[in-house]
Length: 117
Image (cartoon, rainbow, N blue to C red; front, side, top):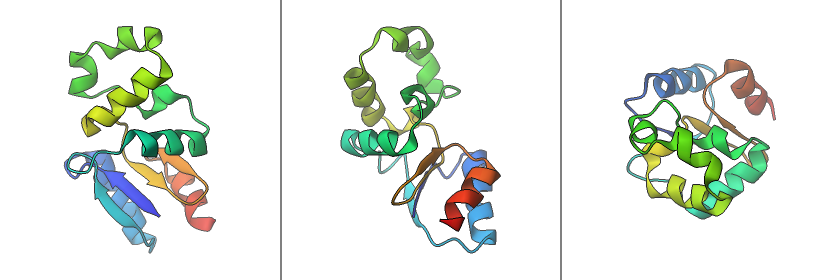
């Protein structure tokens, strides 16, 4: 299991605490210093079944500075993946990745379901 997060993000801190309290074995990855590649993002998106927009950190400073709320609808999927791969701070976090599933954000029920697999 791979846990991708930003150490200063309080949601990531809560998610990591939850994983630790539930005895989860995971590899930790800092999204700011080890940004996901475009290939990884494409694979995670495919596994997640989520709309691509759910991979954007819509509350982040970069998202707002780049006016992505207005720009994303007119961007191609390739352009969106390239943009996400360019800056880890644009990517929604935390991301929990297993062999078969990917979830973005922290919801206890989703994390619990992934631990049961």
